Image 1 (cartoon, one colour):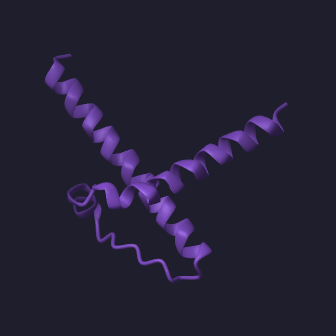
Image 2 (cartoon, helix red, strand yellow):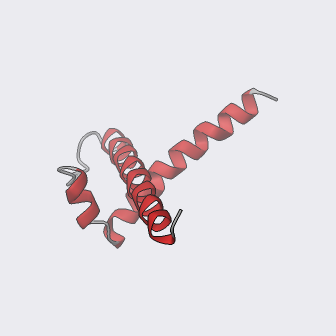
Length: 78
């Protein structure tokens, strides 16, 4: 594969996982704050355009959620 194709694939994977983590983090924050957290996510293209430092804490919450699930699975399989 050419380097351009590799870069394109990794950018696509990065955006898809970022969107997944942001949506998960936003849903968790919405539940924990009883609906007071406003998630300004309209669609996938809006997420791609608005991927700045203001969404990073929400993405970190989403990543933390999946890491906690993996840790629980690892502890359960001891």
